[in-house]
Amino acid sequence: MGFRSGFVTVIGRPNVGKSTFLNTLLGEKFLIVSDKPQTTRNRIRCILTTREAQVVFIDTPGIHQPKSLLAEGMVQAALNTLQEVDAVVFMVDATEPLEAEDRYIAAQLAKINTPIFLVLNKVDLANDRQLARLETKWQKLLPQAEAVAHTSALTGYNLDFLRQQLLAVLPEGPQYYPDDMVIDQPERFVVAELIREKILHLTHEEVPHAVAVVVDEMKEREAGHVYVRATIYVERESQKGIIIGKQGSMLKAIGESARTDIEHLLGSRTYLDIWVKTRKDWRNQQSGLRQLGYEELLQRGR
Ligand SMILES: Nc1nc2c(ncn2[C@@H]2O[C@H](COP(=O)(O)OP(=O)(O)OP(=O)(O)O)[C@@H](O)[C@H]2O)c(=O)[nH]1
Ligand SMILES: [Mg+2]
Image 1 (tube, helix red, strand yellow):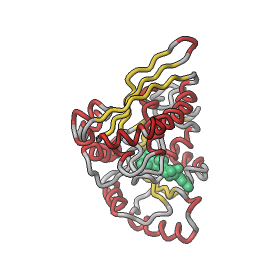
Image 2: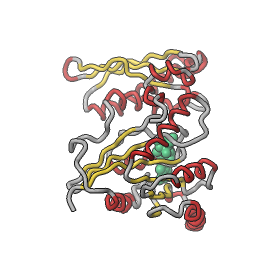
Image 3: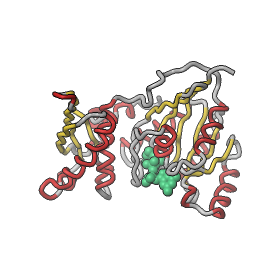
């Protein structure tokens, strides 16, 4: 058998650990992660290259009941990946009961003829009885699954084994991306995401969901230092106040925390200049989605 390659989507409800799983598998943190649902908003390709194979994983937004134009686009983007892959990783949270969204995803999976790997994640938090019961339920609901894996995306438990199983179903094929390419997004995107991640970590309730981050400018200055100007968009003036905080304390915390990660990513000292603007109800406007980095989500039926 020659070189193998193929596309693998990682799909599931929000917050089950899809992005964590890919970060651990790739050994580097490119995808943002948080305990808030709907952290991931775009389809993001991450590339794992070995001597024998190249796997192009697709991180997807969590499948949920959408309540905005943005969320509708996210869910559709995730579902659309099912049509363009060689294998599916369907991830569920081993500590949670089966929900309506899981049944909905299972129904979508029944329509395709692609190997499905059911992954019960967060097993570090689940007990054996809980796991056995959940697995039995899933075997009934998803009898066509190629395999069931118990993993912990956080600790890396069983990820190597799952990777081997995935490789085994990929067809012979070319190397699509260069050896050193790990993510198909520009640095600007990852930088904006890292800022958004800190907002997800530091704010609560509706604020994390109402935020978009755009990198307006990124350039190298003297002595290899990088200057980044970014704008945080919120939907209401009250949210702007929360993001800025008392005497700018929240914005300072967001900036400091993001800068550490950005410097690690870019490998250079970074000056981060962050602005905050209100753009009313951007999540429900086509123009808002287009201008704040979510244009791909408007391309329905793709
Ligand atoms: N204990 C434990 N926590 C995990 C594991 N995997 C992920 N988490 C945590 O679960 C939360 C959600 O992880 P994400 O990777 O952001 O989940 P996601 O499925 O990408 O979520 P969305 O992007 O919102 O769809 C984070 O707080 C992670 O640290 C795991 O195996 N064990
Ligand atoms: Mg995610």
